[in-house]
Length: 175
Image 1 (cartoon, rainbow, N blue to C red):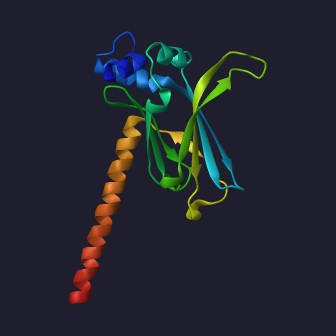
Image 2: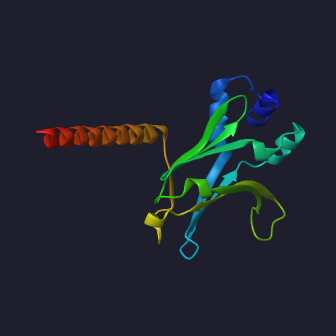
Image 3: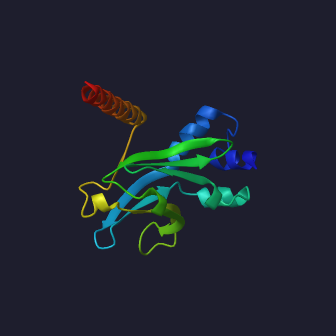
């Protein structure tokens, strides 16, 4: 089954890690983001590469098992599951969400209103956290790998600073 998944991701080079990593990033051709301020939801449509459904059918792969998602309060990572996980798209959300209330589905999108031709999309529905209700300035911003690393380092520094402050406060109380 892992070989089938790798063949869907990279039919020409199912055993080459770097090519599969590149192909995973190319699967998402564009992202559309909308929000509903009445229902307090954000919706992302990740448009997938044309022909993905045909390759999946050829290798008898259920695309519902081909994607994985990691949702944090302010970030979203979507990966492809082949022989291992390959990141397809990662980005920052415009506000906090409730990760446990995230839902997704694979949808068919027509290329234009009058066209029979179309492509698959991942439709991701995110519920805004109570602290982030209302209109967000920017719903989703795709991040480059260096931005993800910088964000992790920034959060680690903030956490370390908070721990240092807590230790300092404890010492002050003891004196």
